[in-house]
Length: 118
Figure 1 (tube, rainbow, N blue to C red):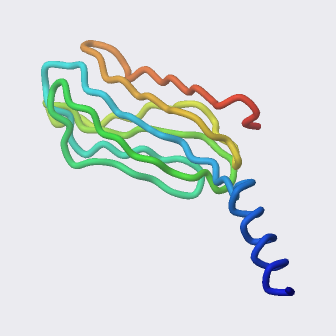
Figure 2: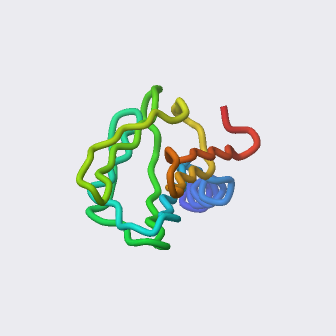
């Protein structure tokens, strides 16, 4: 009988959800040139890709641990290094982050948080 109580409790925990908040990030290259050494820094960690060809997207999901700014660093086709600040993120937020590289412009940031995210 005790086994069934524990089983029911475990099933309730699984069904009600241990939900973990993540950010689904996409980096898009809308330029005519390849972009190299792309790194996105966010609170407590970073991610990136070696090369992003014209028209290509790079997808990455991450969990925010801590609070702080975001930054993207990259190298253009002329081998010049660049850095651009983005939105601040807070632990517990969840949603989508889009970074778009367009011709003759700094990358555009678009952060869309899920309702209820802090």
